[in-house]
Length: 73
Image (cartoon, rainbow, N blue to C red; front, side, top):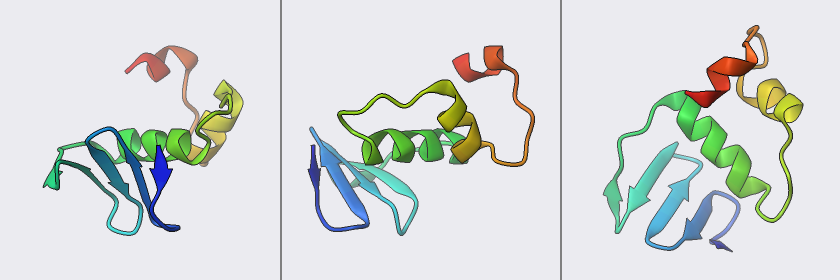
């Protein structure tokens, strides 16, 4: 994975555009929900490191009570 500046992350044929909040595959938009994008962004920002459940919940759902079994979705 390469970081193309502070707003772009590239891996394989994909680009995560943080500023536009978009996932691209071969420069074409990939439909993705907002929470899925937030989860993906957290993971690519932390590539090579473990993101534990508590951090995932804190970052992606900061003001919401989320039950652990909902993370499977």
